[in-house]
Amino acid sequence: MNTIVPFGVGDASFQAAGGEAGIERLVADFYRIMDETEAANCVRRLYPQDLSNSRERLAAFLSGWLGGPRRYAEKFGSISIPQFHTRWTVGEIERDAWLECMAQAIARQGYSTDFADYLLVQLRVPAERILQAGRRGCPVHP
Image (cartoon, rainbow, N blue to C red; front, top):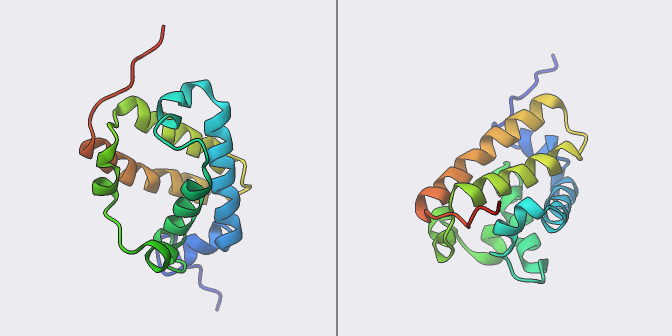
């Protein structure tokens, strides 16, 4: 009997994302989109010019968060997502820009519609927690 494990159980989400190689592609596309999207400037400015460390950290985090190897803990120790992000002031504009870049990156991965939708909904949870930890938006440009 072939039983389909739902996303969020065991490593089903990690596997649906293509494992570590798939997550690395997602993260590379995410940061590429962030660099190329003017509307994301407000969130891009929060990152260093060289995104190598940011890419490594996000990929390591997503690996464990999606049920795969806990690479972030192995490389960097434990993390409290909201606490980690309190060094920046993050408002709704930054949250929305981050999520839009991620939505575009997810759309480029060839994931099933079910997994793409699931992943974006799940990513809204830490994005909202980060917003609550660091409320303020960058200025809206006319």
